[in-house]
Image (cartoon, rainbow, N blue to C red):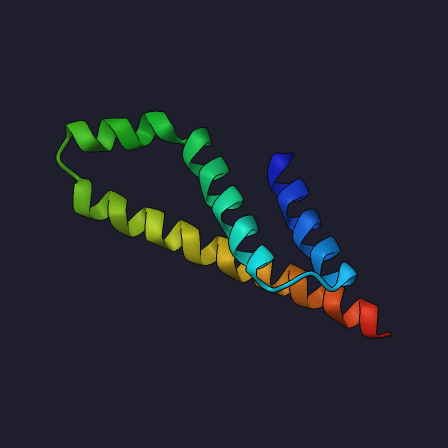
Length: 82
């Protein structure tokens, strides 16, 4: 539910015409929520010595959050123009 609120916040930021750095804030929020949801799996992976794979997974999570936030911000910006 909090992930949807972060995406909604990015959309409203685009709609309100706030600066694009709000995309980064929403990206960090989405990645943090993902980590909080799966932190036990990350800890287990650390114990098994899978640090490189976990870093890759966290980087992909940040990229997915960036795409989702950017599209949401862009959608809000387009709606504002209409």
